[in-house]
Image 1 (cartoon, rainbow, N blue to C red):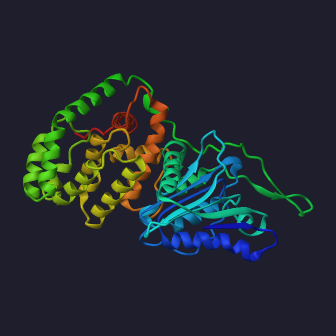
Image 2: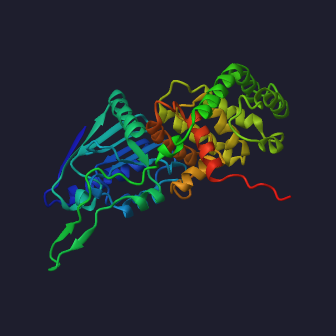
Image 3: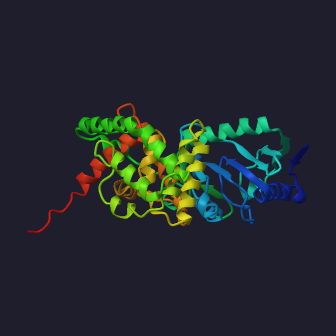
Length: 397
């Protein structure tokens, strides 16, 4: 089925485009939106609770996207999807206008055309758009392109990012009849973190030691995975798992983090954590986006159970198993992001916060290659930066 909209003094047709967006958020289990610029968010329905995947990617060329609209989308997104809004800051032109969704019954729909998400694009301009039914293969082809764009050309949007975004200014001329936009450079780069700070000075020994830790962990990985499986299946108790796991993993030659976790770790609900970690381990081979959705959901599950292992221990395990895409969530990383004026979106769930951190650090990894090969190695440089900037106070005698 095809529906074509050509808006020429036709309010009914203009409303049809908004209706498609409302229909998408109402019935989608997967939802993908791209717009060259975003100046409004006309959706007044909440995202339906069955939607398990959503990505909204906006352009920043010329500063046309509005801060107010970005904040509106962030507020609209559910807490567990606060990492789903991204902006393209690359030097490539970003010009798509796309709405695509899949329903629980498997039906797939695509809307493409000339309309950006703006009052003009939806109501005032002369625009041409088409809505078509597509098959599963076509849906997956487009979806994979959106995932690639997300992973390689996009930056997660938070309130801090919005505040540093270089929005074009609109001002009246002296007669007040016309409006003009103050020029902003085409490719709008916001306050990107300067990861080169991490490589200042002599870092070879730090990287060498971290690589040795990674090699050491690889030697015990199969034994640790077997323990995780035993605990997740209930073949050993949480107490037995902790005792065997800590004996296997606690050596400095394997661990990325400092002391402290063992005090409360003895009494943690390890069966829950192991079940989540096993799901993540078994997902190897999936796309980065699919992995991110899984990791986010598992961390949010542990958050709902108030399981403390979801932060330090689980993030280190995920980093060991997937060092190219997942960081350790620790105090130095939090300080690095804070000092760089980066924070996760307000009210984001624990899983969304972790994915937000991962996305930001992945973008920085490109600045450090080939010397730094993965996020596990970046982590040791962040520890070094933290120790230099925030040296431990010597105890008073």
